[in-house]
Length: 245
Image 1 (tube, rainbow, N blue to C red):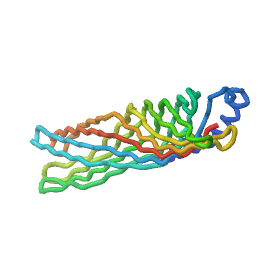
Image 2: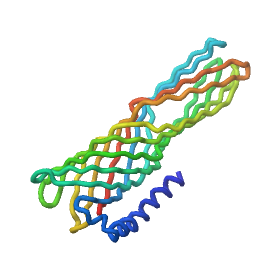
Image 3: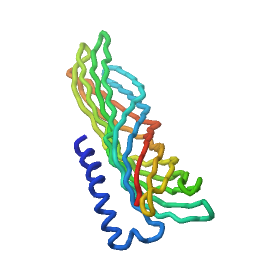
Image 4: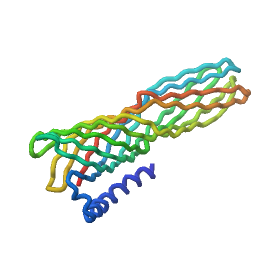
């Protein structure tokens, strides 16, 4: 959490100096080139399934639940745009996000054979990618544009389980760190504040590939359990407010 906050603050502090350096070097004066920074509010959603089995104890258990998370973050982006025809433009934009997005679960599964305490956390730490940004000038004060592109998003999944009862006792943890590929779609409006500075607001929807995690554990009766976890329908919805130079 602290690392993600620090990363976001670094983006905020670096942007003015980076803009100044690029302008002094003459790069920002290249027609169509722009640099920007956005603040982000994001919400994530997972469809999570867990299947656990033990051939030695003839045990089989399933869980399915929807898992949600939220957080705040920052984005730095660099792009190049050009007018195609009157009122229509096309830009290509690269971006990097850092986020505090996190979701937690905790529940108890109990019967006559065992009592289980399960907990888990997922985090979306960062993502980067490239998008095409076709735009249409509504009037001289605003441009409506879309976003379509490719991204890679880092997802951390961790948790633990503790079991007690006549079936046997154990305690274990699991963790995984995945870089998931995905598609980004979005809509935005951009408005000029002066001859150099533009403001924008965007709605962005990211859809990421499914991923799996598997672990093995033994209980106090030496029964071996295999746990298979699968996250699917992974989405990250973002509202971004930013400035570009």
